[in-house]
Length: 340
Image 1 (cartoon, rainbow, N blue to C red):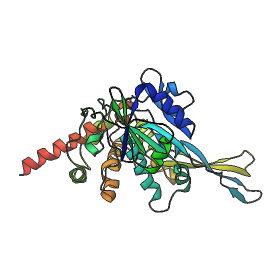
Image 2: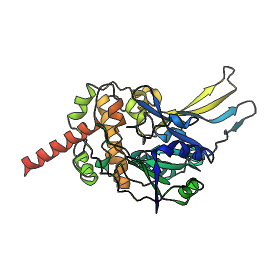
Image 3: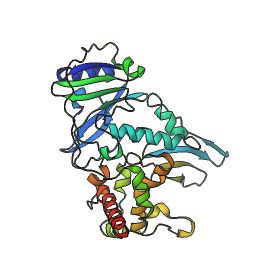
């Protein structure tokens, strides 16, 4: 693994170099405290020191809305729009968002592979970047360190004078080709610590959730929850969607469209006849937590939450996924002591 050093004064030149090779998507400031991944035109607008972007890079592989096919009933034909590989560099991606992409890859590869997602994923190159955990991050509790390079082609570790550069793949080496960097000869900075924690490992958490289906925390949380679905929309591993046909007023043509959906929305479980099989907000809250820490985890051995903290940071009711899980853990431990 090659390692070198990028001085802070050369960061803009580095971004320009990347732009000569590929389209570059990177974090940009939006307002005083918000950041978003956007296509880079001005390298000076790129922010590599940021707490989190509002939405992850997921949107480039699974768009919020897309047309799956156009149909014509007069000719009894249907055509699928051309889907193109993203073929771009994603600069400044945090380790938990890199982990989220890998989880989405699993979702769309398992069973019947999802063509549109997999085509868009082609040619995506990732330059990860370290970060300082804030009050919402808890990625360490799900095994994802701020310096975890998994999934990166190149990784940048913050240093007081610039960035330590680790080249991890052949694609990463190709990105840096032609941009001279001196060998790294500086010690890595001290590691930062998380202030938010889930206090048991995943294998124990699955057992706790198994026994917590009727726990009062679900109803207690539901009293505050607005069922707005914001937590679903900002989550980098949520991938549920709705499919609707948009029919022309003439009734003889239209399009089939896919759009993001979420399990916290009442209409998500509405089926034929108007039946809603997860009517209560408490049931939807429980389902969301089980999706992150049990259902998929039972099959893969990994939590499907990556600890980014977006759902808590964005929640208008101030509901914390960490508080919910830790409440279940505390009560389970108390119950074990009583029965013992």
